[in-house]
Image 1 (cartoon, rainbow, N blue to C red):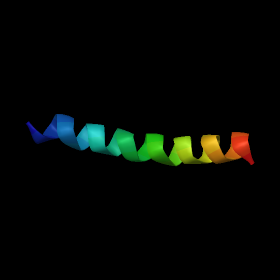
Image 2: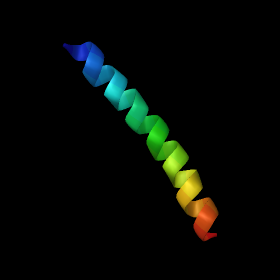
Image 3: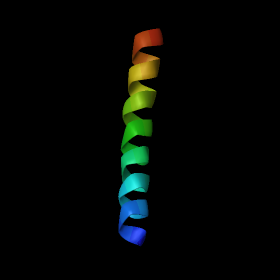
Length: 28
């Protein structure tokens, strides 16, 4: 039950890190 949630959280963190760099990289 927590396995899916844990994996989703980890993916969200990775996406946020990648998104942050991609967003800021493209803008600036």
